[in-house]
Image (cartoon, rainbow over all chains, first blue to last red; front, side, top):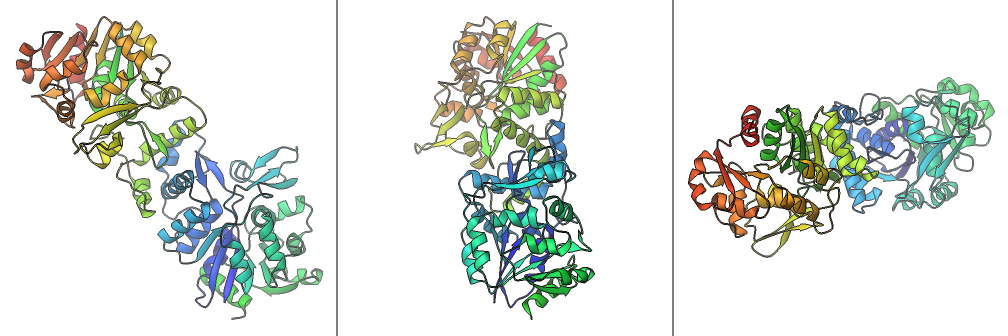
Length: 302
Length: 302
């Protein structure tokens, strides 16, 4: 049974780790690259790394970065006046240095991602949505456009997001294997990531969107609990972008794409307001891999 | 009193630290950039950093790198298959990451070098010989040309050096301040560095060579003790490049440039074979800053 997960960072990564425990499926994770950024001249791919680290079981306590990492380099950078707000641990930096050097020497992001996953003993196929440059940009209330990491890390997602765009999205092509794995998949799972911030940049790649629209079985796991994200600005961003509140908004965010939405038992009341897709109501808290595995089994009908 | 030191790595850095203790002089160090290299995509400037670290008193026990450094990133790089033979400590890496990012954003090496020196509380002016790309390359006995770091670090200077060249030297111009500081100097000291490997790349910058040829008072500190370098391949490289053995070879390496050579008491016998420049015989062991200070006082007649 072939399964593809469309994933952002922490939530999607936890879902991936659960699905990876199901030995009966052949799993591919297609990951958002809209958060990618140049930090100190290094190409960071936060969502890809969060997915790989989580699959390898070496993710940091907050869900991102590496467990037991040190921050020697990051601290030293401040000595020279560099802005080190974006925390890069030393182990994490080793990976980012390796990736950047390979990219500079012409390797596609998907190739480097495969090398990194292999080096960390991750058996699951992890693919960037695209090897091309694609950047999520957000418009503040004052009309100024800022990059994702500036919004998310430097400004700690405090701004109202008045609009969103995906620079490079129009011309970006899917990374090798992305379309093939979606077309081959018996089921596509959209992980419990922030729909506009983490999944829309993947849908911004036209061929990926088309493949998902054409796919007969796409199921989205809502990131909401009682109408709000556990962490992060999902509900606020959805609201300011004009989506309805709660899981009605999640369904609308994935219009034309999904056949089923999985919502948490806390949001059971949303069922009555959703009529265009199937709704599965269950416990969607998946901070532990065994919880994510159980959710995976339910979705797959195992 | 204005003094310029022309410097390679460890030996020149120790001389610099001694001269810097003489509060009566205004000191500028002009440093070799022929050893500069791209390591994991980072621009490393080993001689500049050795000079700055030594002036700051934070150099590693071998003379290069930072004291009490850790190697977390370097070790992690090997996980991904990167060649980590060139040891970059974490603190050292922070500096190199900062420098590379600034250079990529268009800052000249001299500007970044000044920032780094300032951040490490180094009051002495440290200048790269040139902001332009200049690379020392060595021909092995089999006729193959290799880069400096491949020769020195990866192959641990075991090869016979049949020839030497300085890629970019012909077109390289001096970094801002280099010529001015030489012209203003009451005394120019060539540090006890490897003449062909560490000083010739500086002389390869035509305007620097001309300024030194024109200068009335250039004194070279020999790196030899009993005809050999304390560390490194100076005597072997000088021999294979056709220079006479001992300090006669050092004097010949600096032909037209120097008026005086300072040799170690162990090499007193060389005095009889040197007739075209003045010879100062003294204790040239300067592993401790106070020894280097004493040598500086002697050279300056203080």
